[in-house]
Image (cartoon, rainbow, N blue to C red; front, top):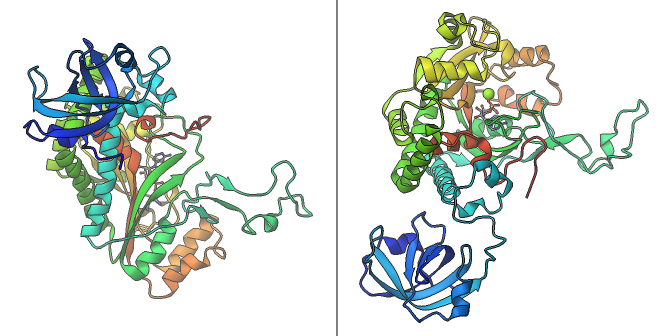
Length: 478
Ligand code: 4AD
Ligand code: MG
């Protein structure tokens, strides 16, 4: 057996008693031909490997370069140096893989995040990205833990669908038809009957509609999968491929929905705080250093850890869309014409407005409900005023919209009427309407953009830095 090793994170938490262990990892630095800082990605803390003088011949010594991979066996002893509790006194050092120092792009110096985006295949080897992806993992694990504890079923909704859940029409097509000469109907349109599925299909923008089918029989379900949107938004908050968590609950109204969303967000943040403290502290420091470059008024009031604690310890603000518009209209920013986009009842809130509400006005996460029906999806439940729907968006400081959700329209006649108004093909969606035909129930759900959540918890500012390989307009590397 090759791999009988201990991971560095585990080793660093044990007491040094001269015990013999084997570790494997990559060299971060090599000093004085004697001290190797070894990292295996289990933690940002390196293990100090000490090579006794004379143990390495000249040739081996030259091969211990930044990035080279090693297998080291030795004894764990209390460290004489400061900065670490223990050392590994090597009795054998085997080079598993060489790394040419002249070529290796990940030398031990500070690289810009832009540079690392171009080298995304190697950026896992930096402390920043090590921390980000350990936190991302932890948040994903907490998502499943939360819903499992609440008896929700994890539902795998399809990636390829024939429906456009949001009615937004920003979808990636899936086809096996030849793009240079597709079969055509007599009127010149493309004949999708000859396509793989015999109809036009696309990558899913949301698992919600399928989620509703399951929830209206199994009560509580959630999805957690990749979703795809071909919106041409080249921003620090949009990806063309992102992961979304979508719970859907029977017998829930909009208030139950808000309560669940708030509890869920706090739960996964707490999980990361409890399990990833070191990584979060590292990221907090990274953020503080990055913010030193900014003018005073652009810096955050709270450090990353304090911000997360604040969110855990305070109730989210809950306001209606109408109240939000009034706050914006009364704001100094509006009066000084600082907003680029229009503010008026009926017009959707833009990211600058959302951020004003959470960052300047309330200084905490805000749940906005009761949006005008005309700017929201067809499935949202009409309120008694006949103008607004039981929608809820959760806005987070530094991010803007992090959750979008609603109570669903469970009344068949009202739903059909709304679909017709919005030109949603009622016939094609007959399967969806069956949930309203046969034992319809009040139900609700929401979608949390996973990368936006990871952005919030890690304090990173560009969504490309919290997903391993970002897909954005004109970029699809690796
Ligand atoms: O508000 P959205 O479009 O809602 C839905 O898809 C509903 N079907 C959810 C539901 O009720 N089940 O998207 C939900 C969330 C947004 O709040 C945002 O956090 C994230 O998904 N999101 C994106 N994240 C990254 N890149 C994009 N292009 C995103 N578009 C939406
Ligand atoms: Mg939305």
